[in-house]
Length: 619
Image (cartoon, rainbow, N blue to C red):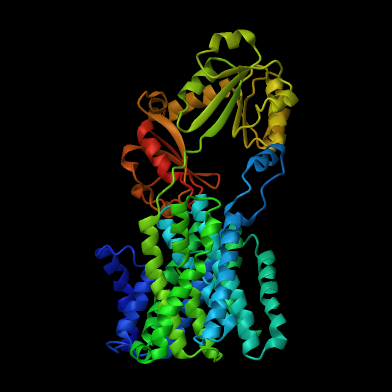
Protein backbone atom coordinates (compact mmCIF):
# COMPACT_ATOMS: atom_id res chain seq x y z
CA UNK A 1 0.00 0.00 0.00
CA UNK A 2 2.68 2.45 0.99
CA UNK A 3 4.75 1.68 -2.10
CA UNK A 4 1.86 2.48 -4.45
CA UNK A 5 1.26 5.76 -2.63
CA UNK A 6 4.93 6.70 -2.95
CA UNK A 7 5.05 5.80 -6.65
CA UNK A 8 1.99 7.92 -7.44
CA UNK A 9 3.42 10.84 -5.43
CA UNK A 10 6.76 10.58 -7.28
CA UNK A 11 4.95 10.44 -10.64
CA UNK A 12 2.86 13.51 -9.75
CA UNK A 13 6.09 15.37 -8.97
CA UNK A 14 8.06 14.30 -12.05
CA UNK A 15 5.41 14.66 -14.77
CA UNK A 16 5.28 18.50 -14.97
CA UNK A 17 9.07 18.68 -14.66
CA UNK A 18 9.55 16.31 -17.60
CA UNK A 19 6.97 18.17 -19.70
CA UNK A 20 8.86 21.41 -19.06
CA UNK A 21 12.27 19.83 -19.55
CA UNK A 22 11.40 18.41 -22.98
CA UNK A 23 9.24 21.43 -23.89
CA UNK A 24 6.08 19.39 -24.48
CA UNK A 25 3.67 22.31 -24.40
CA UNK A 26 0.95 20.77 -26.56
CA UNK A 27 0.16 18.00 -24.04
CA UNK A 28 -1.91 19.15 -21.03
CA UNK A 29 -0.46 17.92 -17.75
CA UNK A 30 -3.72 16.22 -16.79
CA UNK A 31 -3.61 14.08 -19.94
CA UNK A 32 0.04 13.28 -19.30
CA UNK A 33 -0.91 12.16 -15.77
CA UNK A 34 -3.59 9.83 -17.12
CA UNK A 35 -1.13 8.36 -19.64
CA UNK A 36 1.47 7.79 -16.91
CA UNK A 37 -1.25 6.19 -14.78
CA UNK A 38 -1.99 3.79 -17.62
CA UNK A 39 1.69 2.81 -17.74
CA UNK A 40 1.90 2.35 -13.97
CA UNK A 41 -1.35 0.41 -13.67
CA UNK A 42 -2.70 -2.90 -14.83
CA UNK A 43 -2.45 -1.93 -18.50
CA UNK A 44 1.37 -2.02 -18.49
CA UNK A 45 3.86 -2.39 -15.60
CA UNK A 46 1.21 -3.07 -12.90
CA UNK A 47 3.31 -1.55 -10.09
CA UNK A 48 0.56 0.63 -8.64
CA UNK A 49 -2.42 -1.06 -7.02
CA UNK A 50 -5.56 0.79 -6.04
CA UNK A 51 -6.22 0.75 -2.29
CA UNK A 52 -8.39 2.57 0.20
CA UNK A 53 -5.91 5.41 0.73
CA UNK A 54 -5.45 6.08 -2.99
CA UNK A 55 -9.19 5.81 -3.61
CA UNK A 56 -9.87 8.42 -0.91
CA UNK A 57 -7.24 10.78 -2.31
CA UNK A 58 -8.62 10.31 -5.82
CA UNK A 59 -12.14 11.15 -4.59
CA UNK A 60 -10.87 14.26 -2.85
CA UNK A 61 -9.02 15.13 -6.04
CA UNK A 62 -12.12 15.09 -8.23
CA UNK A 63 -14.02 17.09 -5.60
CA UNK A 64 -11.34 19.77 -5.59
CA UNK A 65 -11.13 19.70 -9.41
CA UNK A 66 -14.84 20.49 -9.74
CA UNK A 67 -14.60 23.02 -6.89
CA UNK A 68 -11.79 24.92 -8.62
CA UNK A 69 -13.66 24.71 -11.93
CA UNK A 70 -16.58 26.49 -10.26
CA UNK A 71 -14.19 29.16 -9.03
CA UNK A 72 -12.97 29.81 -12.58
CA UNK A 73 -16.31 31.22 -13.76
CA UNK A 74 -16.24 34.97 -14.32
CA UNK A 75 -19.75 36.00 -13.30
CA UNK A 76 -19.21 39.58 -14.41
CA UNK A 77 -19.79 38.32 -17.95
CA UNK A 78 -23.39 37.53 -17.04
CA UNK A 79 -24.21 40.90 -15.53
CA UNK A 80 -26.49 43.22 -17.42
CA UNK A 81 -25.00 46.16 -19.22
CA UNK A 82 -24.81 49.17 -16.93
CA UNK A 83 -27.48 51.72 -17.85
CA UNK A 84 -27.61 53.51 -14.49
CA UNK A 85 -26.35 56.78 -15.99
CA UNK A 86 -27.03 58.61 -19.22
CA UNK A 87 -23.48 58.00 -20.46
CA UNK A 88 -23.61 54.28 -19.62
CA UNK A 89 -26.95 53.93 -21.40
CA UNK A 90 -25.55 55.70 -24.45
CA UNK A 91 -22.52 53.39 -24.55
CA UNK A 92 -24.77 50.34 -24.19
CA UNK A 93 -26.93 51.52 -27.08
CA UNK A 94 -23.90 51.93 -29.32
CA UNK A 95 -22.61 48.44 -28.58
CA UNK A 96 -23.03 45.72 -31.17
CA UNK A 97 -25.85 43.23 -30.65
CA UNK A 98 -23.38 40.38 -30.84
CA UNK A 99 -21.61 39.65 -27.57
CA UNK A 100 -19.54 36.79 -26.09
CA UNK A 101 -22.60 35.69 -24.09
CA UNK A 102 -24.84 35.43 -27.16
CA UNK A 103 -22.05 33.86 -29.20
CA UNK A 104 -21.38 31.19 -26.58
CA UNK A 105 -25.08 30.48 -26.04
CA UNK A 106 -25.66 30.04 -29.77
CA UNK A 107 -22.57 27.84 -30.14
CA UNK A 108 -23.47 25.60 -27.22
CA UNK A 109 -27.14 25.38 -28.19
CA UNK A 110 -26.10 24.04 -31.58
CA UNK A 111 -23.76 21.59 -29.83
CA UNK A 112 -26.56 20.19 -27.66
CA UNK A 113 -28.80 19.66 -30.70
CA UNK A 114 -26.00 17.89 -32.56
CA UNK A 115 -25.15 15.78 -29.49
CA UNK A 116 -28.76 14.62 -29.28
CA UNK A 117 -28.75 13.68 -32.97
CA UNK A 118 -25.54 11.70 -32.56
CA UNK A 119 -26.94 9.98 -29.46
CA UNK A 120 -29.94 8.87 -31.52
CA UNK A 121 -27.59 7.42 -34.13
CA UNK A 122 -25.62 5.54 -31.44
CA UNK A 123 -28.90 4.23 -30.05
CA UNK A 124 -30.24 3.08 -33.40
CA UNK A 125 -26.97 1.31 -34.29
CA UNK A 126 -26.88 -0.41 -30.90
CA UNK A 127 -23.38 0.84 -30.10
CA UNK A 128 -24.62 2.73 -27.04
CA UNK A 129 -28.30 2.51 -26.23
CA UNK A 130 -28.67 5.01 -23.38
CA UNK A 131 -29.89 8.07 -25.29
CA UNK A 132 -29.86 10.52 -22.38
CA UNK A 133 -26.44 9.58 -21.03
CA UNK A 134 -24.89 9.71 -24.50
CA UNK A 135 -26.28 13.21 -25.07
CA UNK A 136 -24.89 14.39 -21.72
CA UNK A 137 -21.43 12.95 -22.38
CA UNK A 138 -21.16 14.26 -25.95
CA UNK A 139 -22.13 17.79 -24.83
CA UNK A 140 -19.45 18.05 -22.14
CA UNK A 141 -16.47 20.44 -22.33
CA UNK A 142 -13.28 20.49 -20.24
CA UNK A 143 -13.54 23.90 -18.56
CA UNK A 144 -10.30 23.58 -16.59
CA UNK A 145 -8.20 22.62 -19.62
CA UNK A 146 -9.66 25.35 -21.84
CA UNK A 147 -9.07 28.00 -19.17
CA UNK A 148 -5.42 26.92 -18.91
CA UNK A 149 -4.91 27.23 -22.67
CA UNK A 150 -6.65 30.63 -22.78
CA UNK A 151 -4.45 31.90 -19.95
CA UNK A 152 -1.29 30.65 -21.65
CA UNK A 153 -2.26 32.53 -24.81
CA UNK A 154 -3.42 35.65 -22.89
CA UNK A 155 -6.88 35.50 -24.41
CA UNK A 156 -9.18 35.65 -21.39
CA UNK A 157 -9.33 39.45 -21.48
CA UNK A 158 -10.51 39.50 -25.09
CA UNK A 159 -13.92 38.83 -26.61
CA UNK A 160 -12.46 35.71 -28.24
CA UNK A 161 -11.33 34.24 -24.94
CA UNK A 162 -14.55 35.27 -23.17
CA UNK A 163 -16.64 33.47 -25.79
CA UNK A 164 -14.62 30.29 -25.41
CA UNK A 165 -14.73 30.57 -21.64
CA UNK A 166 -18.52 30.93 -21.58
CA UNK A 167 -18.91 28.01 -23.99
CA UNK A 168 -16.78 25.88 -21.65
CA UNK A 169 -18.80 27.03 -18.61
CA UNK A 170 -22.04 26.00 -20.32
CA UNK A 171 -20.40 22.75 -21.40
CA UNK A 172 -19.59 21.89 -17.80
CA UNK A 173 -22.50 23.33 -15.83
CA UNK A 174 -25.40 22.09 -17.98
CA UNK A 175 -24.16 18.49 -18.38
CA UNK A 176 -23.29 18.39 -14.66
CA UNK A 177 -26.84 19.38 -13.67
CA UNK A 178 -28.28 16.99 -16.24
CA UNK A 179 -26.07 14.18 -14.93
CA UNK A 180 -27.24 14.83 -11.38
CA UNK A 181 -30.93 14.50 -12.29
CA UNK A 182 -30.20 11.58 -14.60
CA UNK A 183 -28.37 9.67 -11.86
CA UNK A 184 -31.18 10.34 -9.36
CA UNK A 185 -33.83 9.05 -11.77
CA UNK A 186 -31.75 6.09 -12.93
CA UNK A 187 -30.92 4.95 -9.40
CA UNK A 188 -34.58 4.92 -8.36
CA UNK A 189 -34.57 8.12 -6.33
CA UNK A 190 -36.92 10.02 -8.63
CA UNK A 191 -39.27 10.88 -5.77
CA UNK A 192 -36.49 12.78 -4.03
CA UNK A 193 -35.11 14.65 -7.04
CA UNK A 194 -36.60 17.88 -5.69
CA UNK A 195 -34.29 17.57 -2.67
CA UNK A 196 -31.42 18.59 -4.96
CA UNK A 197 -32.82 22.10 -4.67
CA UNK A 198 -31.72 22.03 -1.03
CA UNK A 199 -28.11 22.17 -2.21
CA UNK A 200 -28.80 25.41 -4.06
CA UNK A 201 -30.78 26.76 -1.09
CA UNK A 202 -27.84 26.01 1.21
CA UNK A 203 -25.51 27.78 -1.23
CA UNK A 204 -27.72 30.89 -1.14
CA UNK A 205 -27.76 30.85 2.68
CA UNK A 206 -23.96 30.59 2.77
CA UNK A 207 -23.65 33.46 0.30
CA UNK A 208 -25.84 35.77 2.35
CA UNK A 209 -24.42 34.78 5.73
CA UNK A 210 -20.76 35.19 4.73
CA UNK A 211 -20.99 37.90 2.05
CA UNK A 212 -18.31 40.04 3.74
CA UNK A 213 -16.13 37.19 5.04
CA UNK A 214 -13.10 37.72 2.82
CA UNK A 215 -13.12 41.46 3.51
CA UNK A 216 -12.96 41.00 7.27
CA UNK A 217 -11.24 37.68 7.93
CA UNK A 218 -7.77 39.27 8.03
CA UNK A 219 -8.50 40.70 11.49
CA UNK A 220 -9.16 37.21 12.86
CA UNK A 221 -6.66 35.00 11.05
CA UNK A 222 -2.95 34.35 11.51
CA UNK A 223 -0.37 32.11 9.91
CA UNK A 224 -1.21 29.17 12.19
CA UNK A 225 -4.96 29.31 11.53
CA UNK A 226 -5.32 30.08 7.77
CA UNK A 227 -8.96 30.99 8.37
CA UNK A 228 -9.70 31.57 4.68
CA UNK A 229 -8.68 28.00 3.81
CA UNK A 230 -10.68 26.55 6.70
CA UNK A 231 -13.73 28.45 5.52
CA UNK A 232 -13.32 27.26 1.91
CA UNK A 233 -13.10 23.63 2.99
CA UNK A 234 -16.05 24.11 5.37
CA UNK A 235 -18.17 25.24 2.41
CA UNK A 236 -16.95 22.28 0.33
CA UNK A 237 -17.74 19.77 3.08
CA UNK A 238 -21.20 21.21 3.80
CA UNK A 239 -22.33 21.22 0.17
CA UNK A 240 -20.69 17.90 -0.80
CA UNK A 241 -22.18 16.06 2.19
CA UNK A 242 -25.57 17.71 1.60
CA UNK A 243 -25.48 16.73 -2.09
CA UNK A 244 -24.78 13.10 -1.24
CA UNK A 245 -27.45 13.13 1.48
CA UNK A 246 -30.21 14.25 -0.90
CA UNK A 247 -29.18 11.70 -3.51
CA UNK A 248 -27.14 13.95 -5.79
CA UNK A 249 -23.50 13.48 -6.74
CA UNK A 250 -20.68 14.90 -4.63
CA UNK A 251 -19.25 16.62 -7.71
CA UNK A 252 -22.37 18.82 -7.93
CA UNK A 253 -21.89 19.96 -4.34
CA UNK A 254 -18.20 20.62 -5.04
CA UNK A 255 -18.95 22.65 -8.16
CA UNK A 256 -21.58 24.76 -6.37
CA UNK A 257 -19.13 25.27 -3.48
CA UNK A 258 -16.66 26.72 -5.99
CA UNK A 259 -19.33 29.10 -7.26
CA UNK A 260 -20.14 30.19 -3.68
CA UNK A 261 -16.50 30.95 -2.86
CA UNK A 262 -16.06 32.79 -6.19
CA UNK A 263 -19.08 35.00 -5.53
CA UNK A 264 -17.76 35.81 -2.05
CA UNK A 265 -14.76 37.42 -3.82
CA UNK A 266 -11.74 35.79 -2.14
CA UNK A 267 -8.36 37.48 -2.31
CA UNK A 268 -5.88 36.47 -4.97
CA UNK A 269 -3.72 34.94 -2.24
CA UNK A 270 -6.59 32.69 -1.11
CA UNK A 271 -7.20 31.53 -4.68
CA UNK A 272 -3.53 30.72 -5.07
CA UNK A 273 -3.51 28.66 -1.88
CA UNK A 274 -6.57 26.71 -3.02
CA UNK A 275 -4.95 26.09 -6.40
CA UNK A 276 -1.83 24.89 -4.60
CA UNK A 277 -3.76 22.35 -2.51
CA UNK A 278 -5.76 21.17 -5.52
CA UNK A 279 -3.36 21.13 -8.46
CA UNK A 280 -0.27 20.70 -6.31
CA UNK A 281 -1.51 17.78 -4.21
CA UNK A 282 -4.85 16.01 -4.67
CA UNK A 283 -5.94 16.53 -8.29
CA UNK A 284 -2.89 14.73 -9.79
CA UNK A 285 -3.88 11.66 -7.73
CA UNK A 286 -7.29 11.68 -9.42
CA UNK A 287 -5.87 11.84 -12.93
CA UNK A 288 -3.13 9.27 -12.29
CA UNK A 289 -5.55 6.87 -10.58
CA UNK A 290 -7.91 7.25 -13.53
CA UNK A 291 -5.17 5.88 -15.78
CA UNK A 292 -4.24 3.19 -13.28
CA UNK A 293 -7.82 1.87 -13.21
CA UNK A 294 -7.95 1.57 -17.00
CA UNK A 295 -7.38 -1.97 -18.24
CA UNK A 296 -6.43 -1.35 -21.85
CA UNK A 297 -5.63 -5.02 -22.70
CA UNK A 298 -9.12 -6.01 -21.59
CA UNK A 299 -10.64 -3.11 -23.52
CA UNK A 300 -8.70 -3.90 -26.65
CA UNK A 301 -9.66 -7.56 -26.35
CA UNK A 302 -13.30 -6.57 -26.83
CA UNK A 303 -14.21 -6.10 -30.48
CA UNK A 304 -17.15 -3.92 -29.48
CA UNK A 305 -14.86 -1.61 -27.52
CA UNK A 306 -12.38 -1.40 -30.38
CA UNK A 307 -15.19 -0.24 -32.62
CA UNK A 308 -16.63 2.08 -29.96
CA UNK A 309 -13.42 4.08 -29.34
CA UNK A 310 -13.07 5.56 -32.86
CA UNK A 311 -16.83 5.94 -33.15
CA UNK A 312 -17.00 7.90 -29.90
CA UNK A 313 -13.98 9.99 -30.89
CA UNK A 314 -15.66 10.96 -34.15
CA UNK A 315 -18.91 11.62 -32.26
CA UNK A 316 -17.12 13.90 -29.78
CA UNK A 317 -15.54 15.83 -32.63
CA UNK A 318 -18.71 16.12 -34.72
CA UNK A 319 -20.81 17.19 -31.72
CA UNK A 320 -18.91 20.48 -31.39
CA UNK A 321 -18.67 21.32 -35.11
CA UNK A 322 -21.95 23.33 -35.17
CA UNK A 323 -20.37 25.67 -32.59
CA UNK A 324 -18.52 27.17 -35.55
CA UNK A 325 -21.65 29.02 -36.64
CA UNK A 326 -21.95 30.61 -33.22
CA UNK A 327 -18.32 31.74 -33.17
CA UNK A 328 -18.63 33.01 -36.73
CA UNK A 329 -20.99 35.78 -35.56
CA UNK A 330 -18.01 37.53 -33.96
CA UNK A 331 -14.80 36.15 -35.41
CA UNK A 332 -13.05 35.38 -38.68
CA UNK A 333 -13.41 32.02 -40.40
CA UNK A 334 -9.96 30.85 -39.38
CA UNK A 335 -10.30 31.76 -35.72
CA UNK A 336 -13.85 30.44 -35.60
CA UNK A 337 -12.52 27.05 -36.68
CA UNK A 338 -9.72 27.37 -34.12
CA UNK A 339 -12.29 28.08 -31.37
CA UNK A 340 -14.39 25.14 -32.52
CA UNK A 341 -11.42 22.78 -32.38
CA UNK A 342 -10.43 23.93 -28.91
CA UNK A 343 -14.05 23.44 -27.83
CA UNK A 344 -13.67 19.76 -28.75
CA UNK A 345 -11.59 19.29 -25.59
CA UNK A 346 -13.51 17.15 -23.10
CA UNK A 347 -12.26 14.95 -20.27
CA UNK A 348 -12.91 16.43 -16.80
CA UNK A 349 -16.62 15.70 -16.55
CA UNK A 350 -16.27 12.56 -18.65
CA UNK A 351 -14.16 11.01 -15.91
CA UNK A 352 -16.65 11.94 -13.22
CA UNK A 353 -19.67 10.98 -15.33
CA UNK A 354 -18.25 7.56 -16.21
CA UNK A 355 -17.64 6.87 -12.51
CA UNK A 356 -21.23 7.85 -11.69
CA UNK A 357 -22.66 5.85 -14.61
CA UNK A 358 -20.73 2.71 -13.64
CA UNK A 359 -21.85 3.02 -10.02
CA UNK A 360 -25.52 3.07 -11.01
CA UNK A 361 -24.93 0.31 -13.64
CA UNK A 362 -25.87 2.58 -16.54
CA UNK A 363 -22.63 1.76 -18.33
CA UNK A 364 -20.22 -1.16 -18.46
CA UNK A 365 -16.55 -0.75 -17.60
CA UNK A 366 -15.68 -1.43 -21.25
CA UNK A 367 -17.98 1.36 -22.42
CA UNK A 368 -16.65 3.67 -19.71
CA UNK A 369 -13.09 2.98 -20.80
CA UNK A 370 -14.00 3.71 -24.42
CA UNK A 371 -15.52 7.07 -23.45
CA UNK A 372 -12.44 7.96 -21.37
CA UNK A 373 -9.98 7.00 -24.11
CA UNK A 374 -11.98 8.96 -26.70
CA UNK A 375 -12.08 11.92 -24.31
CA UNK A 376 -8.31 11.74 -23.82
CA UNK A 377 -7.81 11.76 -27.59
CA UNK A 378 -9.92 14.92 -27.94
CA UNK A 379 -7.56 16.62 -25.49
CA UNK A 380 -4.66 15.74 -27.77
CA UNK A 381 -6.36 16.75 -31.01
CA UNK A 382 -8.13 19.94 -29.88
CA UNK A 383 -5.26 21.96 -28.32
CA UNK A 384 -2.80 20.83 -30.99
CA UNK A 385 -4.98 21.97 -33.91
CA UNK A 386 -5.95 25.15 -32.07
CA UNK A 387 -2.32 26.25 -31.73
CA UNK A 388 -1.71 25.48 -35.38
CA UNK A 389 -4.75 27.33 -36.73
CA UNK A 390 -5.32 30.30 -34.38
CA UNK A 391 -3.96 33.63 -35.58
CA UNK A 392 -4.22 36.64 -33.26
CA UNK A 393 -6.53 39.22 -34.78
CA UNK A 394 -5.33 42.79 -34.69
CA UNK A 395 -7.04 44.64 -31.89
CA UNK A 396 -6.04 48.29 -31.79
CA UNK A 397 -5.05 49.51 -28.35
CA UNK A 398 -7.97 51.11 -26.58
CA UNK A 399 -7.03 54.70 -25.78
CA UNK A 400 -8.36 56.58 -22.78
CA UNK A 401 -10.47 59.57 -23.80
CA UNK A 402 -9.55 62.77 -21.95
CA UNK A 403 -11.55 65.99 -22.41
CA UNK A 404 -10.13 69.17 -20.88
CA UNK A 405 -12.30 72.28 -20.43
CA UNK A 406 -10.32 75.47 -20.05
CA UNK A 407 -7.46 76.56 -22.31
CA UNK A 408 -4.33 77.76 -20.54
CA UNK A 409 -0.63 76.99 -20.62
CA UNK A 410 -0.94 74.13 -18.12
CA UNK A 411 -3.80 72.51 -20.03
CA UNK A 412 -2.14 72.90 -23.44
CA UNK A 413 1.16 71.48 -22.22
CA UNK A 414 -0.67 68.61 -20.56
CA UNK A 415 -2.29 67.81 -23.88
CA UNK A 416 1.11 67.64 -25.54
CA UNK A 417 2.78 65.67 -22.72
CA UNK A 418 0.21 62.89 -22.42
CA UNK A 419 1.40 59.83 -24.42
CA UNK A 420 -0.41 59.75 -27.75
CA UNK A 421 -0.52 55.96 -27.83
CA UNK A 422 -2.36 55.84 -24.49
CA UNK A 423 -4.64 58.87 -24.53
CA UNK A 424 -6.99 60.59 -26.96
CA UNK A 425 -7.13 64.21 -25.72
CA UNK A 426 -9.44 67.07 -26.71
CA UNK A 427 -9.35 70.63 -25.41
CA UNK A 428 -12.40 72.89 -25.06
CA UNK A 429 -12.76 76.61 -24.30
CA UNK A 430 -15.45 79.28 -24.39
CA UNK A 431 -12.88 82.06 -24.75
CA UNK A 432 -12.47 83.17 -28.41
CA UNK A 433 -9.07 84.78 -27.69
CA UNK A 434 -7.74 81.54 -26.15
CA UNK A 435 -9.16 79.59 -29.05
CA UNK A 436 -7.40 81.82 -31.58
CA UNK A 437 -4.16 81.56 -29.61
CA UNK A 438 -4.08 77.75 -29.48
CA UNK A 439 -5.97 76.86 -32.64
CA UNK A 440 -3.61 75.00 -34.94
CA UNK A 441 -1.30 74.18 -32.02
CA UNK A 442 -3.55 71.53 -30.52
CA UNK A 443 -6.96 69.91 -30.99
CA UNK A 444 -9.18 72.61 -29.49
CA UNK A 445 -12.91 73.30 -29.86
CA UNK A 446 -14.65 76.61 -29.21
CA UNK A 447 -17.80 76.38 -27.09
CA UNK A 448 -20.48 79.06 -27.13
CA UNK A 449 -21.56 78.31 -23.55
CA UNK A 450 -20.59 76.36 -20.44
CA UNK A 451 -24.15 75.28 -19.73
CA UNK A 452 -24.04 71.53 -18.80
CA UNK A 453 -27.01 70.69 -21.03
CA UNK A 454 -25.24 72.20 -24.04
CA UNK A 455 -22.04 70.38 -23.09
CA UNK A 456 -23.92 67.08 -23.05
CA UNK A 457 -25.43 67.85 -26.46
CA UNK A 458 -21.96 68.63 -27.81
CA UNK A 459 -20.70 65.26 -26.43
CA UNK A 460 -18.12 67.00 -24.24
CA UNK A 461 -19.11 64.66 -21.38
CA UNK A 462 -18.71 61.56 -23.56
CA UNK A 463 -15.27 60.71 -22.22
CA UNK A 464 -13.40 58.54 -19.74
CA UNK A 465 -11.78 61.46 -17.92
CA UNK A 466 -13.03 65.04 -17.74
CA UNK A 467 -10.57 67.69 -16.54
CA UNK A 468 -11.81 71.15 -15.59
CA UNK A 469 -9.11 73.84 -15.51
CA UNK A 470 -11.38 76.86 -15.88
CA UNK A 471 -10.31 79.83 -13.77
CA UNK A 472 -13.67 80.17 -12.01
CA UNK A 473 -14.15 77.61 -9.22
CA UNK A 474 -17.94 77.98 -9.29
CA UNK A 475 -18.07 77.05 -13.00
CA UNK A 476 -15.80 74.06 -12.50
CA UNK A 477 -17.85 72.93 -9.50
CA UNK A 478 -21.17 73.18 -11.35
CA UNK A 479 -19.87 71.38 -14.44
CA UNK A 480 -18.18 68.67 -12.36
CA UNK A 481 -21.39 67.75 -10.53
CA UNK A 482 -23.33 67.65 -13.80
CA UNK A 483 -20.65 65.49 -15.47
CA UNK A 484 -20.61 63.02 -12.59
CA UNK A 485 -24.39 62.75 -12.66
CA UNK A 486 -24.20 62.16 -16.41
CA UNK A 487 -21.88 59.23 -15.70
CA UNK A 488 -18.32 60.36 -16.51
CA UNK A 489 -16.08 57.79 -14.72
CA UNK A 490 -13.42 60.28 -13.59
CA UNK A 491 -13.85 64.02 -13.09
CA UNK A 492 -10.88 66.17 -12.05
CA UNK A 493 -11.24 69.90 -11.42
CA UNK A 494 -9.18 72.86 -10.43
CA UNK A 495 -10.67 74.38 -7.29
CA UNK A 496 -9.34 77.86 -6.57
CA UNK A 497 -11.48 79.78 -4.07
CA UNK A 498 -10.47 82.12 -1.28
CA UNK A 499 -13.68 81.80 0.70
CA UNK A 500 -12.98 79.10 3.34
CA UNK A 501 -16.64 78.31 3.88
CA UNK A 502 -17.35 77.89 0.17
CA UNK A 503 -14.18 75.88 -0.22
CA UNK A 504 -15.05 73.51 2.63
CA UNK A 505 -18.60 73.01 1.39
CA UNK A 506 -17.47 72.35 -2.19
CA UNK A 507 -14.76 69.91 -1.11
CA UNK A 508 -17.21 67.98 1.04
CA UNK A 509 -19.73 67.65 -1.80
CA UNK A 510 -17.05 66.74 -4.36
CA UNK A 511 -15.63 64.08 -2.05
CA UNK A 512 -19.05 62.54 -1.50
CA UNK A 513 -19.57 62.37 -5.29
CA UNK A 514 -16.16 60.81 -5.88
CA UNK A 515 -14.83 63.81 -7.78
CA UNK A 516 -11.13 64.62 -7.63
CA UNK A 517 -9.93 68.20 -7.13
CA UNK A 518 -6.73 70.19 -6.77
CA UNK A 519 -5.43 73.74 -6.46
CA UNK A 520 -2.17 75.11 -7.79
CA UNK A 521 -1.24 76.36 -4.32
CA UNK A 522 -1.69 73.06 -2.46
CA UNK A 523 -0.07 71.18 -5.33
CA UNK A 524 2.99 73.44 -5.24
CA UNK A 525 3.23 73.12 -1.45
CA UNK A 526 3.00 69.34 -1.68
CA UNK A 527 5.69 69.26 -4.36
CA UNK A 528 8.04 71.45 -2.34
CA UNK A 529 7.46 69.40 0.81
CA UNK A 530 8.22 66.20 -1.09
CA UNK A 531 11.37 67.77 -2.50
CA UNK A 532 12.55 68.69 1.01
CA UNK A 533 11.65 65.34 2.57
CA UNK A 534 12.83 63.23 -0.39
CA UNK A 535 15.67 64.94 -2.29
CA UNK A 536 15.47 62.52 -5.19
CA UNK A 537 11.76 63.20 -5.65
CA UNK A 538 12.32 66.65 -7.21
CA UNK A 539 14.92 65.23 -9.58
CA UNK A 540 12.52 62.44 -10.57
CA UNK A 541 9.68 64.90 -11.17
CA UNK A 542 11.72 67.36 -13.21
CA UNK A 543 13.98 64.94 -15.08
CA UNK A 544 13.61 65.21 -18.82
CA UNK A 545 14.60 61.59 -19.28
CA UNK A 546 12.19 60.11 -16.76
CA UNK A 547 8.52 60.65 -16.05
CA UNK A 548 6.10 59.37 -13.43
CA UNK A 549 3.53 56.88 -14.68
CA UNK A 550 0.81 54.73 -13.19
CA UNK A 551 0.26 51.17 -14.36
CA UNK A 552 -2.61 48.93 -13.27
CA UNK A 553 -2.07 45.17 -13.07
CA UNK A 554 -4.89 43.55 -15.06
CA UNK A 555 -2.95 40.61 -16.50
CA UNK A 556 -3.78 37.51 -14.43
CA UNK A 557 -0.58 35.92 -15.70
CA UNK A 558 1.42 38.18 -13.35
CA UNK A 559 -0.92 37.95 -10.33
CA UNK A 560 1.15 36.64 -7.43
CA UNK A 561 4.40 37.56 -9.16
CA UNK A 562 7.10 39.15 -7.03
CA UNK A 563 7.90 42.75 -7.97
CA UNK A 564 11.51 41.83 -8.72
CA UNK A 565 10.37 39.26 -11.30
CA UNK A 566 8.40 41.67 -13.49
CA UNK A 567 9.69 42.25 -17.02
CA UNK A 568 11.60 45.53 -17.59
CA UNK A 569 11.72 46.07 -13.82
CA UNK A 570 15.47 46.66 -13.83
CA UNK A 571 15.04 49.70 -16.05
CA UNK A 572 12.41 51.52 -13.98
CA UNK A 573 11.93 52.76 -10.41
CA UNK A 574 8.78 51.79 -8.51
CA UNK A 575 8.00 54.42 -5.88
CA UNK A 576 4.73 53.09 -4.47
CA UNK A 577 2.25 50.23 -4.81
CA UNK A 578 -1.38 51.14 -4.26
CA UNK A 579 -3.23 48.04 -3.03
CA UNK A 580 -6.99 48.46 -2.42
CA UNK A 581 -6.54 52.17 -1.72
CA UNK A 582 -3.56 51.71 0.62
CA UNK A 583 0.00 52.76 -0.20
CA UNK A 584 2.54 49.98 0.20
CA UNK A 585 6.34 50.45 0.16
CA UNK A 586 7.77 48.45 -2.75
CA UNK A 587 10.10 45.54 -2.05
CA UNK A 588 11.55 43.04 -4.47
CA UNK A 589 9.65 40.23 -2.73
CA UNK A 590 6.29 42.06 -2.72
CA UNK A 591 3.72 39.88 -4.45
CA UNK A 592 1.37 41.78 -6.73
CA UNK A 593 -2.36 41.19 -6.98
CA UNK A 594 -4.88 41.99 -9.70
CA UNK A 595 -5.98 45.61 -9.51
CA UNK A 596 -2.76 46.86 -7.88
CA UNK A 597 -1.57 50.28 -9.08
CA UNK A 598 2.17 50.77 -9.61
CA UNK A 599 3.52 54.32 -9.38
CA UNK A 600 6.79 54.26 -11.25
CA UNK A 601 9.25 56.38 -13.18
CA UNK A 602 11.42 55.69 -16.18
CA UNK A 603 11.72 56.40 -19.85
CA UNK A 604 8.52 56.47 -21.84
CA UNK A 605 9.62 53.61 -24.08
CA UNK A 606 10.41 51.22 -21.22
CA UNK A 607 7.27 52.07 -19.25
CA UNK A 608 5.16 51.70 -22.39
CA UNK A 609 6.42 48.13 -22.85
CA UNK A 610 5.70 47.26 -19.22
CA UNK A 611 2.27 48.88 -19.33
CA UNK A 612 1.35 46.94 -22.46
CA UNK A 613 2.20 43.71 -20.68
CA UNK A 614 0.62 44.38 -17.27
CA UNK A 615 -2.46 46.26 -18.43
CA UNK A 616 -3.59 43.48 -20.76
CA UNK A 617 -6.93 42.31 -19.38
CA UNK A 618 -6.37 38.57 -18.98
CA UNK A 619 -8.57 37.49 -16.11
